[in-house]
Length: 391
Ligand SMILES: Cc1cc2nc3c(=O)[nH]c(=O)nc-3n(C[C@H](O)[C@H](O)[C@H](O)COP(=O)(O)OP(=O)(O)OC[C@H]3O[C@@H](n4cnc5c(N)ncnc54)[C@H](O)[C@@H]3O)c2cc1C
Image (cartoon, rainbow, N blue to C red; front, side, top):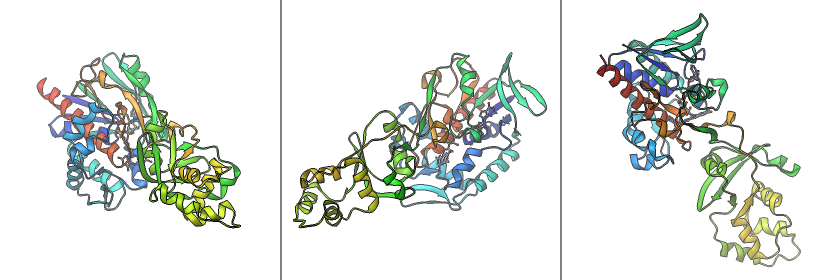
């Protein structure tokens, strides 16, 4: 009996593999001319496969607890074994992040597709799923409309960021009319706009280093990049879901110096020196940090204690998040309520779902791919069991 997997990103490839390994025929269809374009894009900046940490620590990175059993059953160790099993050498960086030695996704994808071909998975590209015709799944293909009758199906259609790579989120309309409960898409792991004054222009493209982001009770040592549009890069991505949800942001510009020491240094007599020169000498603030202080806190307080407090807690007038199309990932999608523990859609028996199209989010650090592999694994296994039991 045939299984259909729609979406050839990492979640769909994993689901297809599990079904084929159980001895079933699998059709794997994707709308794009080639598979896994977002996965390949992820490899451009170094494919961070997972984080080398124990299952509980890994699961704690996903705020939606419903996903914890999946990333616990298929977590960091399983991701690493999976890569090695494909013949991909991996290494763990000092931060615990795990990468292929070559950093890229293409050798990984090539090896994976060859393995799927050897398992007999029938791959189709330029097959765009458009809905149902009776019980059959209907595709727009270069040869015209193509209905596919399948006993089980795994949907792995991705989120709604980087639509040019295939993850358009258009599938939400097809599931909404079937009364599937969906959470609205929101950007995740994205930059934020800042309305800079012209004074900041010389600093665009420069890193903001050795600072701590202060968000709610969290103080996070991080780095980010100042761009003409605002803040971008890893550090800001890490706190982006809290910022998106309305938490105010402040910067600790000197996280290694306590406020009393700073106050003492700033209280030293400054003679004829300007406040700005005195500040620079007393604190050794780099030009980017000095520019930010002037951008947001002028006129600077003369009082050493007030100035020290500002250096330790500089409020940031943050603008809107960058558009969802540019985000690394998306929150929202099929809600946990719509799914059984086998990741089957309650309203559409026999149809399973996996990957970023489900309603979970996580920071960067390999957590996104780990959850896509983990849910693809679970949905694929469950679909295979359904097929086996209905033979
Ligand atoms: C720049 C960038 C860097 C990243 N780096 C990392 C990283 O280092 N580590 C990490 O963990 N994560 C990273 N990610 C995130 C990661 O790539 C995604 O979370 C992951 O690819 C999602 O997998 P998926 O299989 O759920 O969906 P996708 O990879 O989005 O695949 C979905 C597939 O479904 C197909 N599809 C959609 N609609 C239809 C339709 N109607 N009919 C047929 N096919 C359809 C699409 O063409 C696509 O191929 C990065 C993302 C980006 C954008």
